[in-house]
Image 1: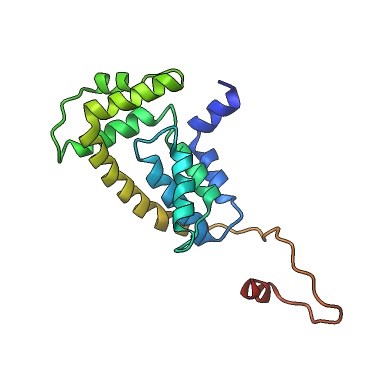
Image 2: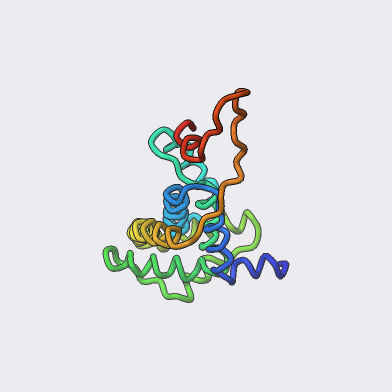
Length: 187
């Protein structure tokens, strides 16, 4: 694994910086980040980006969010964090459903190399720890998503925003110049 890729996973500041510099509205970025965090807390590593895109497609008529912020945020769940996140979710789930898997057994279920081994690991994971992991993940994902939105809105509000690099529509010759507010309202 290259040093830059390793650096991305091990430094949450880079991930946060990438989200904070997305060119979108604070609401859209915060909502995208909340959705990305919720998806990242589910036991779906390997297909989380696809899940974000499916959520975006299914909700496009109801509301919109920054898909870029959501796609960046799912990287919270990566090969270095998947065992601690899933273990925590499993332990939360065992508060509601019986589970007896040890941390070592749990970690061994998540060890794989290649696509075929990933699928075998995925199936074994759900056979051994499915109910507690799913229940815990649903609870943690919901809470993390609900907490992330207001935190990101506050963080984005406290930061100076750069002007958008969008191109202004052409004006008819002799028409008065529109202000930024008039451009936003017209869009």
